[in-house]
Length: 237
Image 1 (spheres, one colour):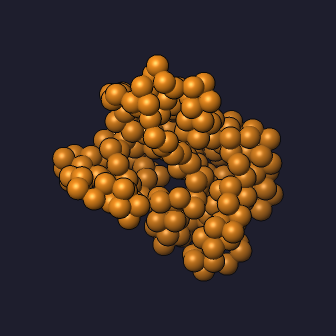
Image 2 (cartoon, helix red, strand yellow; image 1 turned 45 degrees about the vertical axis):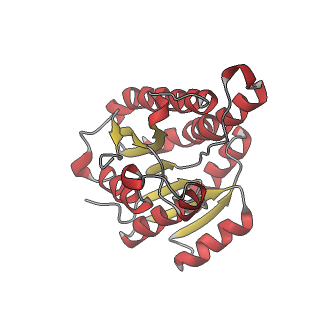
Image 3 (cartoon, rainbow, N blue to C red; image 1 turned 135 degrees about the horizontal axis):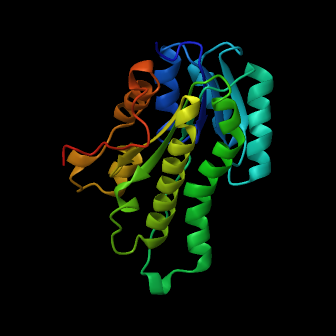
């Protein structure tokens, strides 16, 4: 069984990864709830999918705000009546600095983008994901979550916290038919990333399509035994 007719919530739906994931899941018959802060970009993402309203819903929300996360979940449940999959794709990286030069605001910004968005979304949707005895939660982390490099302390701390959150959810959900897993990447291969690092060795970069199809597999019945995993997607480099 795949994701046909499953309600799939995609956070960070207008980033480098979200639109590709939405297209892949839409092609498999999923019903999509796309969540993002930028309303115009979100409206364009829905337009690009060209799906009927009963298959695609735009949910403008800043998920760093727990009130907006709860309100967004209510919108999804009111429209679809359920939620089966939560893909936590919201996140980001800001240029780092040595710890001695970091400010509390720097750390808070990374926590807000990479941790609080996932926590608030999970808090809002988890009761609904497990309501039918089946659910999937997937989040995106980085090598830096386990192997911090110099000048990445704030980002690495946020990703490490995200990983702890997801692994705890995996343990809490396993008796309810819910799995929670992490995809670990080095760099998401995008035009913006290539422009920013034109001389980089991209062998270990991961394409959005590779990530999307890995998520799709994790949402099948056949992947039900995969829970609490950190799945590396950087094996070529």
